[in-house]
Length: 216
Ligand code: DX5
Ligand code: ZN
Image (cartoon, rainbow, N blue to C red; front, top):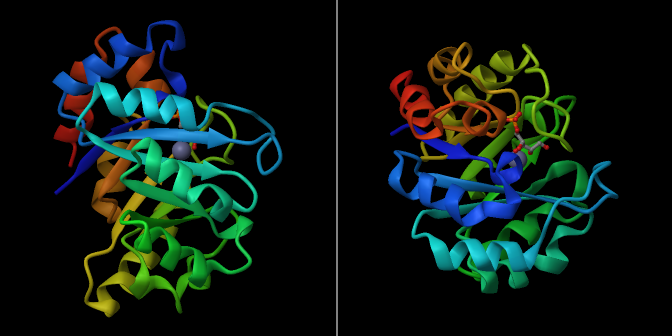
């Protein structure tokens, strides 16, 4: 089943509660929360207290995307704050297998994120252990960037790898998703689409979420 995950990076932080209420009443399945440390990516966003606040305001699945170095240092803190899913970058992980196991031991779903330059083949040995893979369709760090077209190819290749495992591993796509490419992304094999700018800069965000989902 297709899922839309609005990214609160593009929300109105002064009135975050209103935006969470909008998501609650929408057809969004997950809430995507981007955590940036200013080291792994050239931007700083928000962290544990914001996840905790959002947790109190929603029963939707909290999908926490860690764009930080040594992400394993913070898995437990994000779990305690209310994260349901943790995704962290292949490019930031030295002991990825151990980190995936840590996320599972903490009772969360685990996903690995690939930057645009990282081939899907690097996941061949770890794939059966994962609940999802997040393919970046922009370089991480900022909302509102231009979608990278090579993403379709990566999704198709990853889909083949997943089918070979015989397991239900979701493909999530993050960055530059809009009403012109969402249908094609679902068709290529994406299960979850993250959308920040497209949702929050639209006149009717709830309706935009419905429109994105209808493209599945
Ligand atoms: C980028 C983040 C994205 C971002 C997507 O580093 O990982 O989740 O919020 O924003 P849009 O949909 O505006 O490209
Ligand atoms: Zn993200």
